[in-house]
Image 1 (spheres, rainbow, N blue to C red):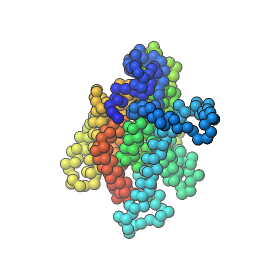
Image 2: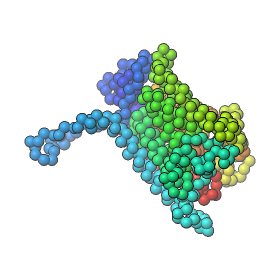
Image 3: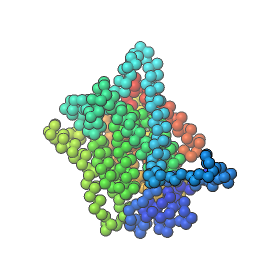
Image 4: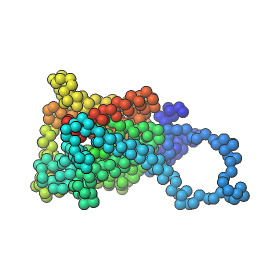
Length: 467
């Protein structure tokens, strides 16, 4: 097939006025992102855009009779099934694609968890204690907050409450403390995140790009954090639900999901930028077309506000979540300064020193994400986004800008960049487009999966900090 079809065209319907798209004979009468076209509420089609319509069935196949007596008339499709099919089939397609990646990732992480101990034969734990090898770094904070509350450490308020609250809710169900509950929550929301990622990308760029994007984000060197007892999968799932609902014009759902994202990570507040952008784009950038659903944007900060009220009542400090960041020596600077300091640091350490290599990976992730997003802005490129898809670029650009303006203490100026890069999923969409080249796909997957093993095994063995 000729893959270029998806770059100037959309799915079966215009995302704003519902007119026929590339699958119709005639082109839309009004451009997608013109003010005139944005009057109505968006009507989006979930049909795949990365493939041409199926060829006609050969005449020989048409002549095949169904099983049974030829005199019997074919049974009618039940009305309930005909009603469900248009909206259910895309979700089933996304679920099937996500499940394959999800099961494969779980099997791979079990393999690494068991076989990593070959490198330290003198300290092999019992099999029933292997789950405890995932009890590292931020996981300790989330589990301890769920079990003992925010008063157990002065740095605990740096970790937002939704994820530990879910651990506390499920803790009575799982034996062995909060860790099994945390892993279960992350694994299940990892599946939700993959389904939503496939659904959103399938809707915008077609099924093939969606399948590659879903696989590439899990294969990424920090992909295992979507399954570890961190809040990454919960946050990413809420972000994708919010953006997908906004794209469909359901801004109440979008902003409720954004509020929950804000109670998971502070960066959830930044969802206001892409959501407002998409809201105004769908209304032709006209203030006169703003409707009552704009009130839903007031929900976005509610998660952070509720957390601040809770902290004031428990710790006496409204801004304890901000003051707790002092433990990581976080401070704001001009954009790009942390990247420059990281570059200087690379000249001060031996090339193979562990911290130097970690900073090199962090720097490559940030720089790579910026370059990929810039490629999406190029017009008439195989990797370009349409103007009506720029809400995805707004979503990624705002947190990246804030991230490269925030530094932590020496020597980890770009702390956790590799893990946080999972949240910049539009960059993985670009990689999914580039994956049309078999050579690129093989290069990326071999390098990414091997790097992920090198990140995961040292973390499980307490050899090296990962992210």
